[in-house]
Length: 569
Image (cartoon, rainbow, N blue to C red; front, side):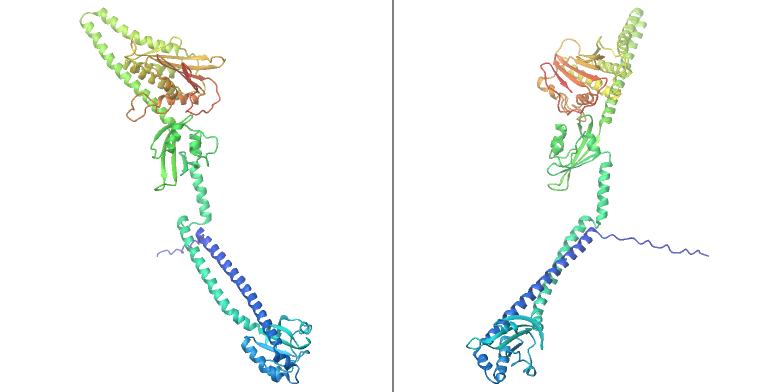
């Protein structure tokens, strides 16, 4: 028997009105209130003007009747009604008023639209008229509420002999206003319809832009947007079309070493390397360009926002420092491997030579040949190991020596080289490989380039020692690499540490001119400096203090050029 389950109760979701819908309702309400207010104001003004016009009309009619000779003469006869009643009816019809009442000074009517009211007392005030004044009032009489004027009738001597009252009923005024009110209502309805249509069109467009979301949803979306942009590890900078920074997330601020907020400032005014600022401000998009900041290597990409002129530029930044360091270590390991391969090849050739000497009976020559080769290799090893107790430096020097020998360059460790104790505590093994490895690689290339300009074999001389900084008691690590190359041109001394500067042709990946830039960056990161002496060959010296407080410097500033050296902070 199948089991019947109770239907699951439906969850009632509260449908949030979209922002466009809320604005539409508010705008319709505002338009309705404005139109209604204008209609009421127009009605009041129209009513006041109609009343004033009625007052002017009844006053003019009453004074005209009071000044008529027929009225003055009839008022002094025994039977005024016989003459004045037809006259009053004619004036009522011609003047478009509701009544013309002529009475004696006691208020007894001589005329009235309803003949039955003749002879009765007038309903209203007559005191001001008896005093000789014309006045108006709204009073409820036999015909209902009316706007009326009461004026005196004077004889030839100026005495008040009778009174005239002319009035227009409020009902007639309402009838006159009805047409104006109808037109006003039609105008108000048309204005409301046009206002509602315009509001609906505007909010329809707004609904497309807001994707039908409500104010709370838009607020949450903005909060999610801000949280996401600041949480991602990739640096993100948004620029408007004028190059003003609209957004710089936390990762970008860290990668660019920005201490002050960047929002609202031109990107070109930020304290950043000139090549980086030029790449971002350039008209063409940037794809995976390497740039150096104060202490990092970053990969920069730019992309315009929108089509056509665009709304601005999106700049993304990725930290390439560790990858660059790993690449340097990989290059060193690859160089070691190539050197070992070359040494293995040479060892095989030498072994064949020794075997051949033995087979031909020249045993003495075989022993001398074998021991001389071993002695040269052992001398270099003993020299490095004896002078440098730091394993990283010793291994690097031995590897670079083998690599230099493979390329026909003599690598010499000076007699003054000695590192007997630990390296500076802030100096990492990667930074040490970056510093010494790039200096030696650059020197080997320079020595090979200047091989034909100097006598003897191309030579690279390395000095590595712990010393006391000149003029102070502070200890420092000194790394000096000299070569027998062509040296550095005086006008190029200040630029050799800029990213992209190189006298050699670009490599397979276009990665030239970054080695010395990384040296300068690593030195700054560890609180040190680089000095360049240009003469017969180039001499580059790195000073690294054992204790320092990191200070950020712009990588585009390399100090002042002296007559024989330049110092890079």
